[in-house]
Length: 149
Image (cartoon, rainbow, N blue to C red; front, side, top):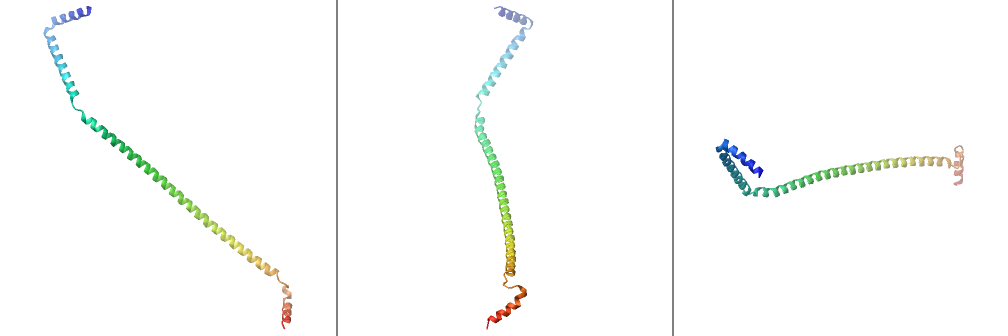
């Protein structure tokens, strides 16, 4: 009650100073309030179909973009892995060919050394296996002729 008396006292003081200003202010505030309500009503009632229709299409486009990007990355990575595997296989086969060639060269050297050893042993065997020494060979030939009548 005391507050109402104070407000009424202020209004009466204000009205005494400018009685015409209070009615203009009330009219301006009323017009402003009506225009705000009209604008809000119009904004609330306008159709909003464009936002709802664009959202799902954009989501699918974004998902398709990510999927395509992932496929490209996976393809690039798998191609790199495959190429590395091919190089490894080529290097292994080249190393196997080199080892086989080296083994064949070693085998040929062993066969050649074995042949030389056999030739040397055959020469020694022929030199050692004589029945008669070299100095007595002419006498042995005379004896062989005597046995053949």
